[in-house]
Amino acid sequence: MSEVKHNWTKEQILEIYNKPLMELLYEAAGVHRKYHDPNTVQVSTLLSIKTGGCPEDCGYCPQAARYHTDIEGNDLMSVSHVKAQALRAKASGSSRVCMGAAWRNVKDGPEFDQVLEMVRTINKLDMEVCCTLGMLTENQAKRLAEAGLYAYNHNLDTSEDYYKDVISTRAFEDRLETIGNVRKSNVTVCSGGIIGMGEKLEDRAGMLVALSTLDPQPESVPINALVAVEGTPMEDLPPIPIWDMIRMVATTRIIMPKTQVRLSAGRTEMSPEGQALCFFAGANSIFAGDKLLTTPNPDVNEDMELFKLLGLKPQKAFAKGSKPETVEAVESQLTDLGEKPKWSRPGHTISRNEEAKIRAKEKNQS
Ligand code: SF4
Image 1: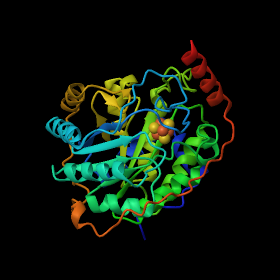
Image 2: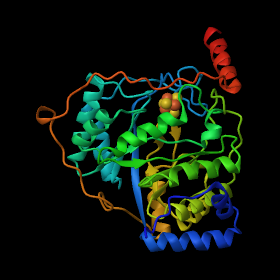
Image 3: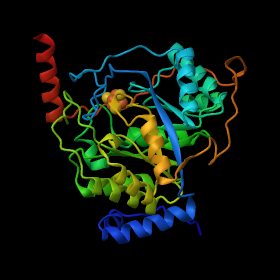
Image 4: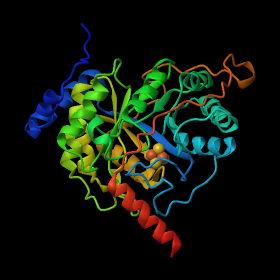
């Protein structure tokens, strides 16, 4: 019988989440020690290779073009710039570079070819390469795999029920379809979500049902705390208590025992003690670097100080999987299909997103 259970229900997950805290921590730490070295933490650097101007309306995101935030957009980064940043990340202890582009979906063409070259370049530095580029077809996933991609990030964000209150420009099923396309290649899956967006506990459990019932479960699950950015529809939401983060990490660890649970956005609001409890509860991955795409993140030196204090060490690249081969563009067997897939556009109205859009228009006119 498989050690990993794939039929978790919302009720079972809520029962775990709501356990007395000491019991929850004890159980999660036990699972963590069984499957992972509790003193090793994987460190990734997130690099925004194309910032801002995104056509989507994710209510939490300062990169959506329709909201008025202080984000300065830029065009796709050059391969040499990406290489320089990756070398810096490696020198400061990161084993993985995650490249994010503010796109709705990947489009075949010169920009995607440039991203494939970035993947090849970082792979040759003996680092794990991850991309988060929006929705993806099977052929695009296979082309990324052929270039040497190690992981693809595509967050479910929240439960299927609450998704309609956060985003109107795409549907939850599109997310699952992209994850399915990634699974048709040998690229690993990184998928998680955000807490503190006004969701109920049932939604947090619902998101964990959706992730844990995937077979195989994602190799990496980022747990983000909302960073409420001025100008976005969620600008007024209060920060979540640290205890919610600890409970979410512990629950994720118990139901997805082999997964790397990643402490993501919101770490600047967490004390060293809070982060230590998250590591004890089963978090074994962080994003390093002073920015998480566009939101603040602790300084690398601060992280290394914390690691020293807690006796943690950064995980080596490819500790949990083998290094993918890189096929050069000229030797590629896969062609650019020039695909134009019809991802859905539910188009329902989310009043707080609409209000933020109107406020942005007024600000732009004044
Ligand atoms: S989260 Fe991604 S898809 Fe959504 S608005 Fe931001 S950049 Fe665009």
